[in-house]
Length: 142
Image (cartoon, rainbow, N blue to C red; front, side, top):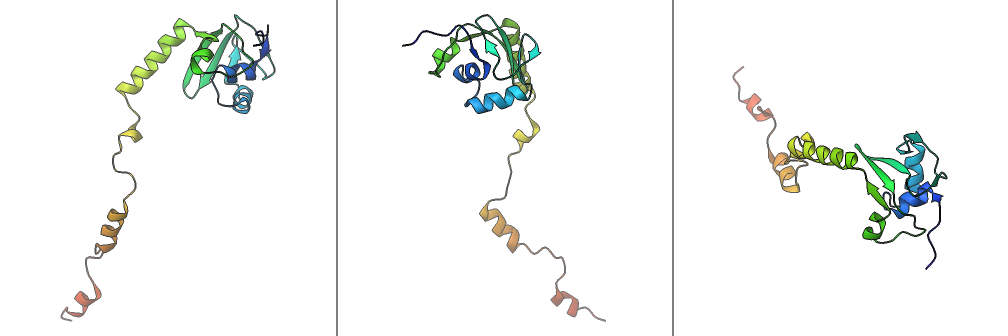
């Protein structure tokens, strides 16, 4: 097994720490400005060292982590989680956001109906939409 490097590329570290599934996704997110080191926007090739403070925005959530280790390869989740430590402020903010989502769920998530099923569509097709038919019009005295 090789020794851990003294520094490595940011995109490779984010991939190894399992923040993103691929390095290409990590590069895209970095280029969009969703990853910062020390509050400054960075480029994918920026070197990451142990002790750096990285903020990663994934969806509406911003996680702030301190780099605890470097790894050249992507390992299992427990090994990846050993590469960083989330700051207490970040943990508090993440828990508050989870509580807010629990108390005020997304309105679209409460919709139970959705698309009509095949059976519903058949019922709709059988339903006579018109209140008057041509036959009813012929019967009227005129």
